[in-house]
Image (cartoon, rainbow, N blue to C red; front, side, top):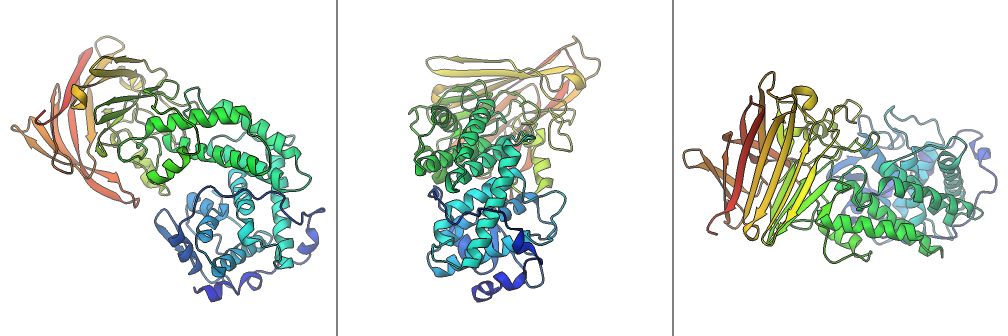
Length: 556
């Protein structure tokens, strides 16, 4: 669909229902007192595609249909993640990145059409509502932040009335949801998004200044509950931590735009979360693939971290979040010590206690398989234990992933210890996720020495009831990054791993059967890429079973 057509159908496509013009609320605002500047630049290519009639998100494209015939905001079969992108108006940043009157006209028209569709009898699928607090808060913040582009002072009066009517109505609804007599407790990114929308509305709408104090009170409670003492997020997801960190930066910027100093609790949370975020950065500056963490451009992480005053050296441990970092020479290991998040914060949790990722310089060697941003089928597969660098028993997940997404059976305790010597670092932990199935406790020790050229592991399966009633099969997996190659050597007793550029590593083991099998890693285009995995398999039939392995650089 051409831009010329796009800019013609705003009001013609969907007239308001009879009488709905009179349903406008009293005291509709006429202007915005504060318009916080957006911190994050949009994607100009996505903006140009949108002007041609197609939304792009996570590398996928949705060409919207003729609005005279269809509701473009309710495509059949579209995932909740995609619908959230459409209805949150995050794509306004993409249009903003395209200079010129055409992009302004496109944004104006799409906002106008959405307002009219939402005031009509439009229906949404059961699994999504555009008026969920997180979606609504994000939409309000985007409308306010980009209003200087798409809501010129000398604009169409009919559009301005419609826009401000919708803005006020949604802001009142959000305030009632968060602060009313039956206020909802909203956690995770959705909670911070909702609070952000409330604060933006309080800053921008005349007579709503009390919302600022209410929003800051909610923000304080949410930060205290969800940002742990070491700066990690209670979900244990590095990706969600980054999302929350950016939301906190947005809130601080908006407060500054309105002349409000940021509370000390907000500044403290930004510093702690930013320091924890630095802990996770490895290789090319991206985040490790734990717990639904998607690929994020290093430049965006750099931009976010650059807006906070942080210690120059990252933490070695995040004891409250449950991670250890081993770093010597050019080598780095990020180790998940197996803590399970509390109920209500485990919808993103992968069944991967004691998983790790290993990086050498800018290259990844061992990585978890990743996640997918929109496909629930892929998400289910990639949350499973075999998709990670850890141990699986009897082909079962270490944690039970329930149909609603949270966890059922999981670890009740995880014992972690760390030792740092002059020329080595060692971390060990254990989890009891399998104890209820077969009585075994899995313990893992990771040792990094010889200036980072010697990585060793010791896996222990110990029966908590003495000699086990029956043996249990185990499989210990090491997924290679697709840029690495591998081959069996020494009559199949060892594996030679080659990194890009030719650096070689030799993998050998004791206590299991060694094999080299196919695997996948989710690529930057959210498509699976073929790779290999080293697998150590065997049976635990005694009270104590140990498997030892090592990865050592060739020629050192």
